[in-house]
Image 1 (cartoon, rainbow, N blue to C red):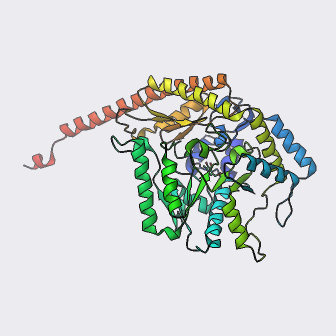
Image 2: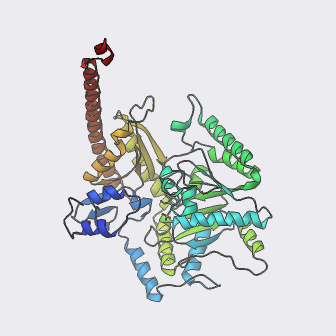
Image 3: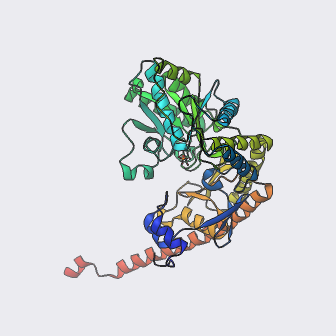
Amino acid sequence: MANLKPNSAEARDVLFHLHSQTNPGRHAEVGPLIMARGEGVYVFDAQGKRYLEAMAGLWCTSLGFSNERLKAAAAAAYDKFGFYHSFNHKTPDVTIDLAEQLVAISPIPHAQAYFATSGSEATETMVKLAWVYHAARGHQAKRKIIARDRGFHGSTIVAASMCGLPRMHREYGLPLPGFLHTHCPDAYHGALPDETDEAFATRLADDLEAMIVAEGPDTIAAFIAEPINAGGGIVVPPQGYFAKIEAVLRRHDILVLADEVVCGFGRTGNWFGCQTVGMQPDMMALAKGLSSSYFPISAVLLGRPVRDALAEMNKAGELFGHGFTNSGHPVGAAVALETLRIYHEMDLVEHVRAMGTRLKTGLEAIANRSAIVGQVRGEGLMIGVELVADPATRAAFDPGLKVGARFDALALQNGLIIRAMGDTIGFCPPLIITAAEVDEILDLFARTLGQVETQVGDAQVRDAQVREAQVREAQLRPNPSQAAE
Ligand SMILES: Cc1ncc(COP(=O)(O)O)c(C=O)c1O
């Protein structure tokens, strides 16, 4: 806390507040960046500095940071009551309306909506429902879950077990037994030389089948995937990947769970990410864009077979033994309903496609003038730019150079908020973004990229000079064995 003024908001934050996904030691040194307010796609810090929030906060505020209609919808819902629940046959009326609207746009036929309050709860709920599905059909041993490397599914214990990111496991002895991981479909790094996308996808499906057979198909309940990996670096699967994977899963009676927490609600240029990548899930988890994160609400959409299994399981009159106090909260439901209304009115899919194309082609044009961009990838308004030491060989930068973190810090100075995932720079702006605001992202990105190139170039020159000096010094130093002679 060396540099923080005693009793300042920064110092009090360090003393009293434990932050998510933040290094505690570094936080104590540098303190927080305190954000004061938002306006459209911009946020302003406590000093009044403006930032273009090109990550929609945490991939979530699709309607920006100051939507008046969502505020009014929440206020009107609070006027009726501050809370009601959905246990024991009761429910607020607005929660029924939201369920109906979600089912109307669901790609899963004959779906029902189950409500929770976070993405983690939604992904975990899908796991419990998958267990019920198999148990109700007499397959009690089908319990293992297959997730993928570089996937992200949340922070609670089962959700974290499904993550394919070591930082989600390291401190906790996770994953739990029975949570397995198969390959990430990253053709840029994972495909063999001269391997086509189709051959790569076939190889991944074959490897998945080998894993299933080795584990025992009658021990595996479900496979979970984000249609496009978000936090793992914005990884778009090759064409045809999910068709091949799902053929394997269907062969072994394994459910397909889509984690649409980021990809849902227009993000990838369709209502749902599964439609963009040709995935046909049995259940899907929704959160973030469901309410533009103006209220903590999430949902699971489950299809007819799972509904039937639940009915079968509880046919003797037992209760479905699952539920969160705030499941179907009336204020969250009202905010989500209004969010959906706005999506319909703004012609969400067309707008995202137009703005996404503008952003991606702009980033590609900048990439073509840069010596350190390896790949620009993504769909809709979810785009990653991977920085590499050598685009020709796809060789990564020396991790010591911290290229992604440098980019993040310089972008912040320039008034742009992005997400560095390793050396991949992520963009996931509010879906209301305009053409002029996309162009502003492109200008700020180009400026930051130029600064990173200079800094990395300087650091590489410095490193080379240090190495040369070390070699020279070693050559001048008397060789001990010669000295002894
Ligand atoms: C794909 C995905 N699934 C699940 C989650 C977990 O959501 P929550 O943080 O609301 O629990 C996240 C959070 O970022 C996510 O990106």
